[in-house]
Image (cartoon, rainbow, N blue to C red):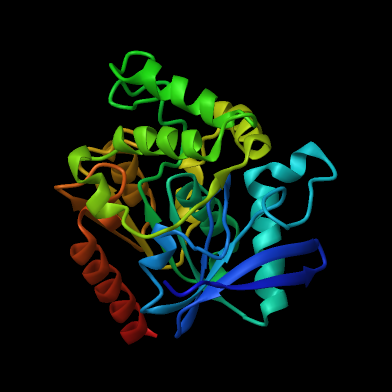
Amino acid sequence: MEKWERKLLNTKRGVFEVFCKGEGEPLCVTHHYSEFNDSGDYFANSFTKLFKVYLINLRETGNSEKAHFPHELSMLETIFDLEEIRESLGYTSWSFAGHSTGGMLGIIYGIYFSNSLTTNMIVGAAARDYATFSKDCIYNKAHPKYSKMQELIEKLKGSDISNEERVNLSIERTKLSLHKPERYNEYFNIPISKKMSSIRLNYFNREYQIYDVTKKLSLISCPTLIICGKYDVQCPIEYSEEMAEGIKNSRFVLFNESNHYPFLEEKEKFLNEIKDFTKKVSSLN
């Protein structure tokens, strides 16, 4: 499989590692605590036939800038970093696509910098704490698979586990978020490897306790596509419905045969929805 092109980008806020693939209008893709490499990312791959995709290693991941102060790992500071990356690449605007906590970053991005975003695509995310009050969320203690998920996450944080063990734990964790876990090998069939940044995850777990931007959703003015799987155990559908209701210029699409990975579980439908959305936005400009 073709590798992603790696770049080290100098910005006013430091050096950031960026991976690039595809042709077309620019699209930023990232995740709040994933560490990418030139093997790419399944979610980012979904867009490379339609966009020139920039897959970004955030502060403290890969070869990107370190955090000189703890607050630099926050969601808002992360958006400031993305804005500097956009400017350093020479774009007056670009699109954004985020899955899960990447989608949460997209919401923050839209609230503060809608003018920088041609389109904003949010998949399986939320505008507030999605675990504390939803028993449908696997991170809620009342969920039947809560303990199993926590056990896997803690093991994955460890630095002393072998690569083979890390892979097996990641597979087991991912299967908890698939509507049809028996199809795992069909969905995840490309040699992609990425890590989890424990320092970013730990900071997120603290910030998440006070995360709620629902009252600011009306500030998002850029065209926004919101996608969620009907059976999403990480960010249940009511949170996507809430975002769609709060964002005036938005479209919400429910994927009836998906859990947390609609871009793999209903791959063809996902691609068609992205095509239709971007085509409609282009026709209005």
